[in-house]
Image (cartoon, rainbow, N blue to C red; front, side, top):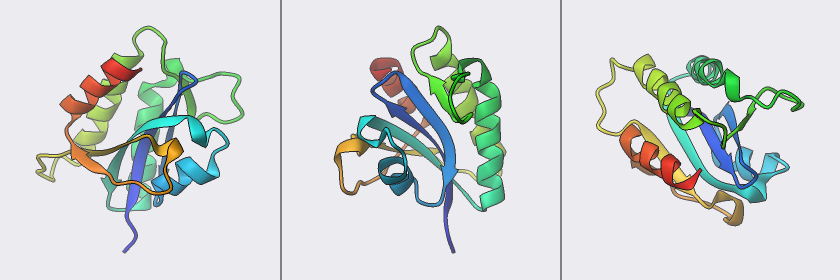
Amino acid sequence: MKKWYSYLAFHNNNTFKVGYSFRVFERITKDLTASAACFFCVRKEHHTESEAREAESKLKKVLLAYQIKDAACKEWHHSKRRGVKAAISRALGQVIQMNKKQIRSVDFEIAEGLGVKSSTTWDATSLKEIQKIIKKST
């Protein structure tokens, strides 16, 4: 059975992408034109494609104020605007709440330096750890 994920991919040009995919690494590194600039990605596993789409919608709704208005698609957001870090934390918290029936000590997986890798490993982590990383690196 195929695994689906929602994700946030942070790029060196002060932007991040919100999306969903069953192949996050390939989506970020091969399908996107700014792939070389992706330095950090957070993903959340979902049971179905529908659930991953719902999570993506929740993320985009919370992060709407940070969306790049002139972008060709609605998936790109500013990562340096005032309040964006708190909004990202709220958005990821809402995605966790979607699956509150699942009791897990680890809510997300992260990978770093995606733009310079031919493959990657995903490390399980908590929202608290992601908040620290985002605070430090964006």
